[in-house]
Image: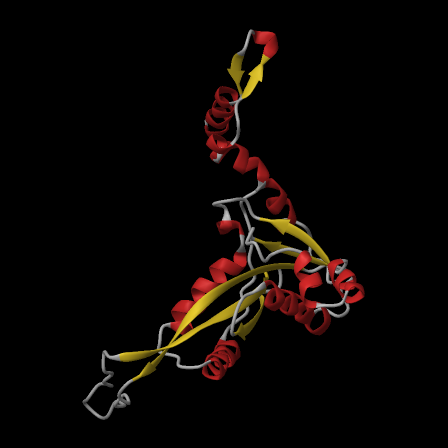
Length: 228
């Protein structure tokens, strides 16, 4: 957690952009009966029955300091798909960057080894050197801005029946065209984390005090003092 908090508070550097990455699945559904569009005085009507058309995956990358959002829709989210998405970020979205600072969760596919599953060794090594990886802790995915942005996307664009991967990509393009860049101003810092999330830190045995535990009481006292 502290590692990610230190990253998000770094100053903006176009040569070392900070990018958060996450993905989500979208169930593809089609109408069994064509919806009836709205008409004067009559709302649109949609039949409850639908047919399942499989699932698709959406990769999302967010640059918190600029508000830039990038998405790709794929059939699957394997290690190879992930590696290809990162190469797209590296070579198409940030070709001038010296290195991309990447924040993501600990999903099994989120590994530099994915490059070696997708590309020849020389290309895999080139790409691996293009990224500096930082992982959110278990149950700490709230530190990943991309997860928050995926929630926004879901509410604004994905809450509808989408029948195919091409249709999903069309929806994503339309969302991007209307989506305003929102810069993230992260206020939560490591200093506050050590107080507010004190229960997550291990207690340390103080051998000099005969095995008495320390760590929690002083921090709580410091918090009380700061408030008073």
